[in-house]
Image (cartoon, rainbow over all chains, first blue to last red; front, side, top):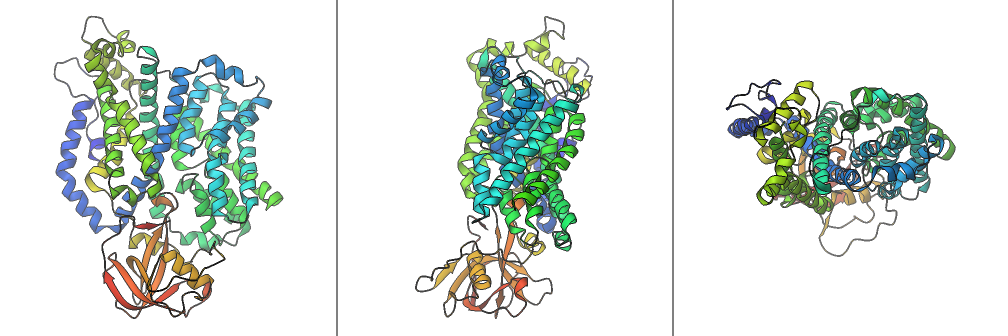
Length: 332
Length: 259
């Protein structure tokens, strides 16, 4: 923690020979932290709540990193090796068609939501209509084979849950894409950055990967901090109190999905364990989780800008809950 | 954040990830099956982070060309390092993330947490906040246990005890390993494992009440030998109970979770 609280380099640095740059800050921070280690370790041993918080924070980061790296590598490869015109041409012009196509294409990205954000970012940078990219962004973490198989394992003998999850998630993603195509404004999006500094494709690849990694990674940490705090602060017993209220239980589990920020590959197991809740509310948990959660909102804010995230996340929440409730009423 | 700092952060992150994934430490946070992916992504991070150093050693001119975008912002004639610094400083002044986003400094938090603290696996604090309900068995066909003294996972014991009324457990000597969680009323205690499906954020506790032996200190790891006994309370509460013949202190297993 000390490294981030260490004095940041001033925005306007005088041109002197000796100046405090980022590297110096790292060095000073490391020295401070090493000196304070004993204190930190003792503090954590004495406070089980703090230890639990730290464990959950670290595990969210570690769990998400391989997927983030996968997403970053894919998106950097997209930036460096795929010509911009190719992807844009592969999708039809009209959002009526391109949005469902892009949503369904999400089925091929085997990962969780951390991987899909950087990929969607580079799709936009590569000239794909944002509406289509967002349908992909929302659908990919929920409907890929890995997640569907995990859902089938978590709900044995209930294939309708897998089916309902697929339909509700895809429907919500497509509706969000169309909503963006109709109402979305380009100025809400931060213009995608093209990190093309080096010579040659390899250097573009490396620069783009590093940039996305630092950026998305930083926001992932913000999300991890929030989710770990919620996890420790909000007692699970609150949930039991609302389990048999039909409307509130749906909102409660949808809200839980937002604050817990569980990876979409694991959330089915958590949903299965919430057996005191109705299937409708558990489906809402499964549909909302991969589309809106604190970690994801932070990642989206980092990739597409804050003014995008504050509009996109709440609307997605409403659409996802509605889609889950309708699908559950139809199928479950 | 200038280019050197960016590379340092990425390299440190890769190093931290590699460090925990090559030892048993990573099992405090994620499932064992994640290990190859952790190692692979750590290597990717190290390659990305160390690339500038390596390429500068091998092709010194190319590394300078990497700073070309900054050069237009600054007067010509200075050294490459100054160009990079100046370019970054201008962008940081905008609060814009051209050279490197400031938020990336936060990536040092997990790095520091891993290198300095390595937070412990979830223990009795997390377990006591979790519900005691035993998840309904997904395996309706509970096979008979093998002969002799049988080590069982807590979740298997709890399943057989709660959802099968202990039929397969009757008359057997069983062995359960977990950490000690005292009950909130202070009278009884549980042998406990956290069950994890992906990472510690989704973990929930499996608790088996131990009768007949005094409670060891909380969070100590123990192996309980004993026999099945019926739970006196309502079934909805779902607590499984073991009548202990002996409680032995053991080391924490490499994988402290059940999955």
